Image 1 (cartoon, rainbow, N blue to C red):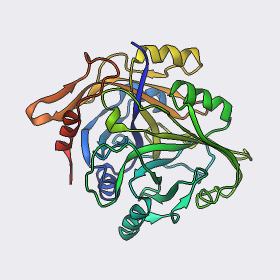
Image 2: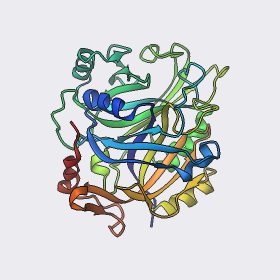
Image 3: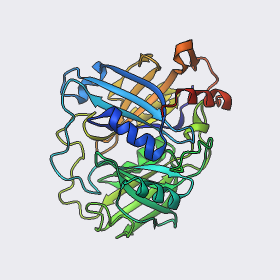
Amino acid sequence: MEKIICGIQQMGIGVPNVQEIWKWYRSNFGIDVRIFEEAAPAPLMTKYTGGVVQSRTATLALSMAGGGGFEIWQYTSRNTEKATFEIELGDYGMYVCKIKSRDVRKTFEFIRNNQGNILSEPMRDPSGKLSFFVKDPNNNIFQIVEGSGWFSDTGHPSHCGGVAGTIIGVSDMTKSLELYQEILGYETIDYDVTERFDDLSVLKGGDKQFRRVRLSHKSMRQGPFAKLLGPTQIELVQAIDQTGRRPIFENRFWGDWGFIHLCFDVQGIDQLQKECEAKGFPFTVDSSDTFDMGEAGGRFSYIEDPDGTWIEFVETHKVPVMKKLGWYINLKNRKPGKFLPNWMLKAMALNRVK
């Protein structure tokens, strides 16, 4: 089966307080449909959890407006550790999660009226599009961006959808582009600019000079959930002055405080594995067969980008629609690249949490 990147399935977020922070995400972004919630050990992740099997609780949630979801992840066997240094723009890893909006100014007013910790007024990026930055109560930074590719109108007052991409700090733009452009299919360069940027200046360390490359994909993603996940962007940021730059997760575990991984929904994972290995990005974790998350299942694997940022791939095999009735979507034998019908995707809204 050929490799198909179906879209960003979710942004993994390590938190000390799953239920509390998810309530904030429901209120401010409308990410309110629970796909699964599970507490269990994570035996396959010991490479990144100090060689010890750690326990955790995880909730996967999304917005029926469209966009990727959040996997909100909390250790139950240890404390969730913060970075011991103040993270700056240009440090290596995922620094910002992009959330799409139907109307950036209206989202700004809504979050401001909701007492959100807004870092900037709406400002224009190098492509002329409006966006602004906001911190959640755990100090994770989100950028509200002009969205496209909507799935449904949920009527949520924030005018938001789900994950529309991320800003990733990198040390070597050329090396990083090999992964994000060639393997992950973000072939289009929306802009490639080196200067000081007004819209980034509100971020810690953001008043310095950066090379900033935003990537997108020309054609619509294919696959069962592609219409729901929608189009996304990856923005790579390289500090021109590299002194003092360090990995955001230096001396910490995967699952600790912050954006822990960017997860892609994929098909043809065997072919993807061959391509990743041939280009120098071997799978570092691989569940090899169906990994059961209690209410959902699939095969998952991880690679690292050139700076050690965790990228997850999930080939989804089953998804719950109505667990009480035993109604699951089985994807194992579906034709690759085929969309699920809209009614089936919309049925997932039965799992909405107010």
